Amino acid sequence: MSVVFQRPYQFVPPDRNPLWPWLIQRLRIVDRYLKRKDGVVGYECRNLDRVRQSAQRGDGILWAPNHCRYADPLVLGWPSRELGIHVHAMASWHLFNEGAFDRFAIRKMGGFSIHREGTDRQALESAIDILVDTKRPLVLFPEGTTSRTNDLIIPLLDGVSFIARTAARRRAKSGSGDVMIFPVGIKYLCIDKIDDWAKDQLSRLERSFGWKHPPENSIPKRTIRLSETILALHEIRCFGESSSGDTSQRRAVLIQHLLSHCESVLQIQPSDRDVASGDLHTWQRSVLDRVRQIRSAVASKYFAEHYPSPPCSKLVACVDDADLAQEQLSTPDDYLGKDVVTDTRIVESIQLMQESLFGKSDASLPLKAVVEFGEPIPVPSERAPRGEEDPLMGQLRERLTNLVGKLSHEARKWSD
Image 1: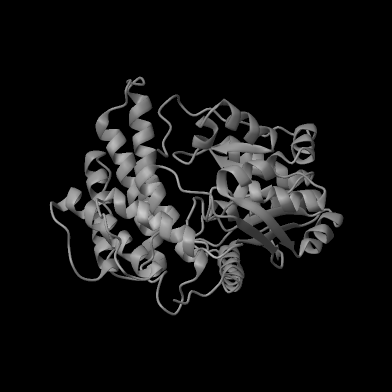
Image 2: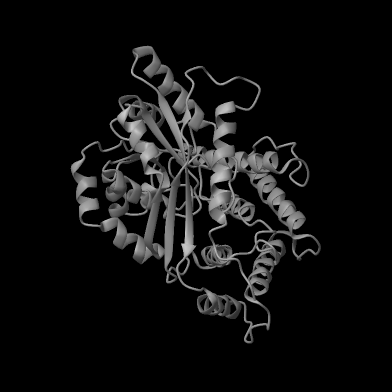
């Protein structure tokens, strides 16, 4: 559940005491946690000299990584260790509500909260201040949410530009120096061959649908078949029957139905954008904007009604449907195509289905994280132009896309 119903939002500020992150790194707590919870057992950091040189110049440093797994923030603890520095990172408010330990650990590692369902001036000011005083790099995930697709980038949030440009303006005014954005590519690679793991996990998923005898198909075909089965089940719930034809079109229709229904329940002005046509990037951006608007409306209505307990079932259903729409957006139909399928894409697809059906994925397959820093982007102090794409975000998107695309070729190509 992405919207927090336990209590209204309260900003969690960054803890600037260096003792806790030093101790956590010293005891290798991050390493043990990543191995146990996410199966990430090794790492490789590349181009750290670029960050060192920028830090030596006294730049305000912003790391802008892709965000494909929940493990990403902790994985960035490894380049921090190699560089001998600590970082601050903006984290969604709901992560601070997963439990007392998570709340404590995220804050002590340098995390601070952002209210995704509303305007959070305290979070923005904290992020700007971190870039201005340059004591630690700031980590912002420009995609704003976990994409679950390691080889693709979803539309970026303009808030990254606002934070970076405002900090650059303040630094220029005081003569303090520059602000630099570092595109950071994170790629997870399978250490061992995945055949046995994939067959076992696929068999478990198939049995959950009552399929006693697994089909005699290749691993990619079994994975695609299960994904299409889950899509059909969602269609039956929403429309009373499953559809046929192009799965991309079917997902688009399902997403439109889910979002339109939520907008109707919440009395949000319906979007006039047709999700089944037009530019892919524009459509993805539209879907993500509508998901955020639904979550914001749910949070506003819930806390305006004096915290009913349990929360209204209609509000919970709207959050679930918005989350499902975003999940469907993270399921590209050509991801397992014959000419592009890799072992890591199969693993991602299986784990996404497990998260969707069971709430968590199997993390027994050992992974290695590659963290590569791209060429830094100088941040201009001028405000972004109105009525057109911010050239800073266009440059960041291009470099991050190229970096992730390059890393994608390091995965093993699948061959039956």
